[in-house]
Length: 337
Ligand code: X2X
Image 1 (cartoon, rainbow, N blue to C red):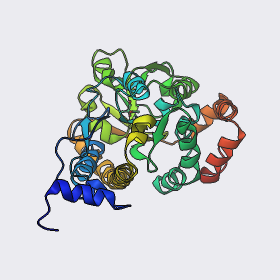
Image 2 (cartoon, helix red, strand yellow):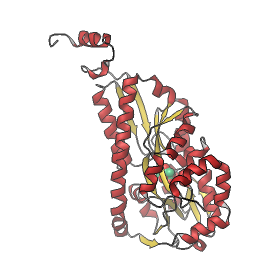
Image 3 (tube, helix red, strand yellow):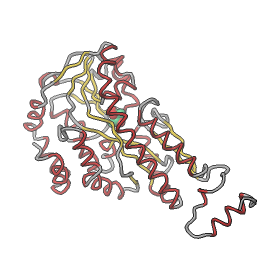
Image 4 (cartoon, rainbow, N blue to C red):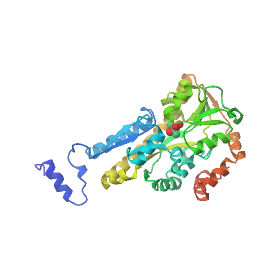
């Protein structure tokens, strides 16, 4: 065996049933070169862990599958890249389920205001029946979602003009939200004036005061330097948001089974690593942000929830999603509203 040339070895092993070609020898140019787009800064844990997964996949496949990471909206805004994913111009994309809901309505359901109390409840739902329900809906749109969703985090409201402590403070507040009907609906119900803007334009919208505030997990506020153009952060934790690792289904199915299994396994493993990174990062960031001049406010969530109730927000969205989806959500959150 040792004297065999690589080519003959590969031919021989390829002939043997069940042995994958990519496990043997060193490959030349990648057979599959796929783009992975993200909307986050390069030093966000999502990009660091995605890069690690890509490296492991490249190595274990001897270069047959080369996943190139394009962070920071390099390939366009979320709205643009979602179209590219659908057409196959981009093969892989991490996207918030709430933004994906413009295509797959039920994908925003985990973002219902104040639904999840904490991370254990989130992971139980998203790795369990609720996540499976959402992924089945995504699969009908020519997009494949990997099993483990990546963390974005619990979202908090920041502001350059005034601290948001009660729902009254949100009255007429110009807040940038990502492009998604759920976000607009929720902040309207809270009395604010939401403006839909992709994150690629968020910093400049805040800088030029097109929006007074925005809402995001601390890790995004930190890595996108939002603290430079904001003064207050109110710890509203008003929803949990995650990133599905999405693949164009045609491109994903074009991979040989063993290569697809390898990539799936490594991407899912990195999702779990990333969740742990982010939980740690979000815990430590408060004092880093304070050191940058941000003033933190703790808030009582109940009046915000009550305001949503009074506005009919929960009933409206229950009807939109339908009883089946809503009851799957409530299995994990308890009765909502
Ligand atoms: O657009 C946002 O605010 C962000 C970065 O959190 C999402 O991708 C939903």
